[in-house]
Length: 116
Length: 111
Image (cartoon, rainbow over all chains, first blue to last red; front, side, top):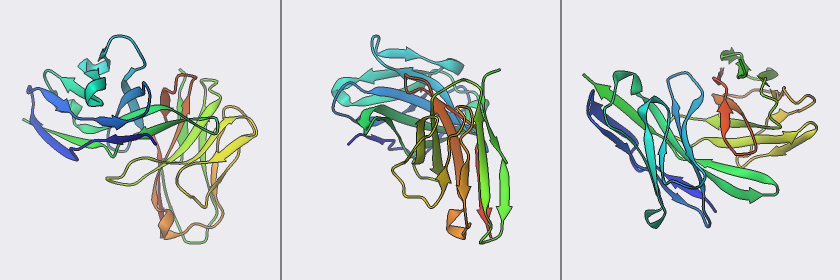
């Protein structure tokens, strides 16, 4: 069964500092990997995705993520955080089939707080 | 602009009432989903549809029901709301590549 672990429930960083959000996944083959962001009271917005090819993926809003198969990780990074980046971030893995349904499993999220 | 819309955004309703949460998308996606989201918890899939007249239950057991009579419309119904149904409900649709587009959600409170 596929699963996603986001070990950090809550992270606080200073504005302008770098950011790394951790994501570990469990999946039997090459996974489809995603990062979504959710602002308060909103739905989830796709930041970036990895399907194949270059393991360093660029996304919107200056985010990037690196797929490391040996570590089963897909960590999200940003070199300089802005106050508007405060939100909740969800990692997701997909690819398994369950009766025709292409299952996507979401992590429990990491809430990012940005301080001045 | 292609998008996915959920109404209402917020709903407070009494126990025993019947409610329908609306979800519509303009992207022509065949696949649509309903997720339940509680604070600090992962998103739980409660229903999905792969096309018109196709609906399936998801990973999390739910007393709600769904219908898919038109490609763009995927409403969720609770026949008799209870306080345990209090949650945020997110609707999503996807293309073939499993990339989901989410609506803004409906925050339901049953009192």
